Amino acid sequence: MPYTYIDDGTGGTLDDPESQIWYHGSPLLLEILATGSSITRNRELAIAFSHKPSQLGVADDGTIHHNGKQNGYLYEIAEPVSLGDIYVHPSINDISPNDPWEWLTKRQFKLKLIQETIV
Image (cartoon, rainbow, N blue to C red; front, side, top):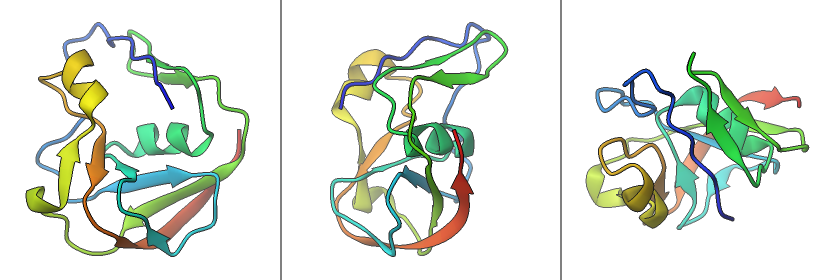
């Protein structure tokens, strides 16, 4: 699914490279994250992804906007994630090479349900 990224205009990054917490947002109730799934270290971005948007943007104040209409779930990856387990989403490399805010998994991961997300 293609996403549209709009720079937040503040010079800040969506990714937090110091964080060890990884999130996944989905409209599905899951226990295991499949290989090839998207993850991010940005909680608000994962919540937006849980609503299955076709477009996503970030306002000047850092607020994430999207057109998703589905309720969903926010998950935390429940085991350690190493750089060998993931790679930057190819479209993010083109859009935002200095701020890799969406990654894809090379293997399955256990998930911990954090909350239900309501549009």
